[in-house]
Amino acid sequence: MAPDFELPDAGMDSVKLSDFRGRQHVVLYFFNKDHTPGGITEAVEFSERVAALARHDAIVLGVSMDDCMAHELFIDEEGIEFDLLSDPEGEVSRRYHALREWQVGDVVRYGIARSTFVIDKAGLIRHAFYQVTPKGHAAEILTLVQSLG
Image (cartoon, helix red, strand yellow):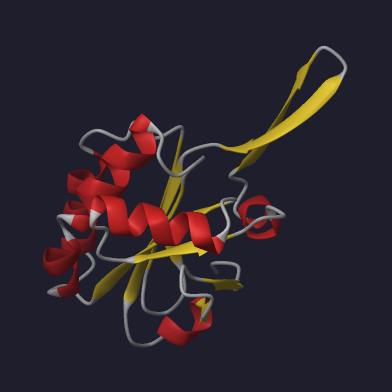
């Protein structure tokens, strides 16, 4: 089962994974930061496929540690067509094993490793991808969602 969560979207409204159970498949992806080349590529490519995913009862949710206001600006600037959720403490990212830590000298740093999960209507993780390459990834995910039926 996919770990449930509740996070704020760009408009500061709460989004709960369990609200989609029984209704829609969820493409849940974690990305490191708004306004980065990979973050832009992945968000735009998913956004271009929102209608095609909707035809297969699927939605997209993006998660990063950016705050809600940063997400709102990113959505406006890039024309993103789906919700971006704020996980500032990395709690949800940890539950999905998307939060990584590394040490630079004596300093421990944290960041999100680009990851994607395809969660079916029953709330089961059907596919999990880590160390995702942004370019072309959304097309691959669309094909997987189409096979869910």
